[in-house]
Image (cartoon, rainbow, N blue to C red; front, side, top):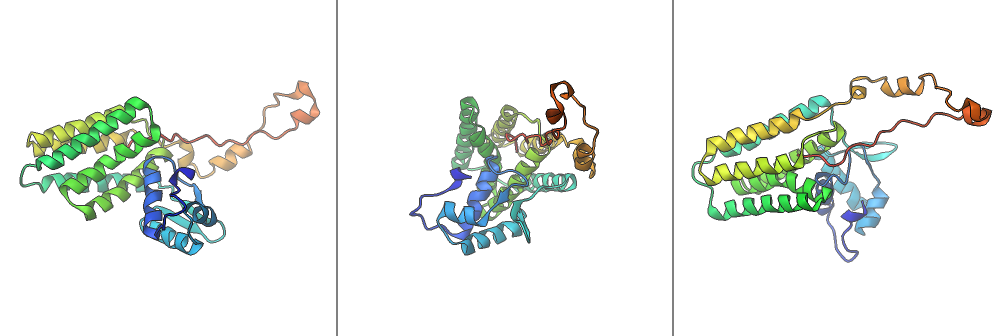
Length: 262
């Protein structure tokens, strides 16, 4: 979280705090289920806890966080059903934007989109996971800005952030280079005036990303944690003495994959 902090002299608004957290989600630096402590955020941003609370309330309204009355604010952990809904919403909105095109995309906007794809390619070559994750998600926000305006871009930013959380939570295996190549093909189709082709490419791209989600078996088993905790221990260390043999087995908490593709 330290990478999100602005300079101490900056006067940061609740909206800016909320947007910085969403950007961190897009970059894969903030994960599903992560606790966002009010005091820690207040210290990082150099603001009062009241402003942090307002930022968290805005993120809650945007579906990014939830509050536990005793433990504080946490990043949401979307369910598999919510994952399907989020991807369906993205497909509907993004293909809808392309369907609505009645004229060629202006040259300046095509240039902006092509520059964005080049930035993605550079981040992939440099092996910068946070930057490439952010840029791959931000392509869809950039496309929405170019084709629909700032309101549509805000909607896509939140949806893309949610699908980034989903990709992290469900262990997406989608490749960054393939996502970038898909983006390049969509831009090329728009440049050629092939709106129908761009729609087909976008639908395939979003569908492919969704199909690469790999929900773990434990997400379908509400007793998985208890089942693992109560499983009989294998006495691997009996020969090393009674104290070590009686030691509790290490807890199981597999690290989530962080570099996922929106």
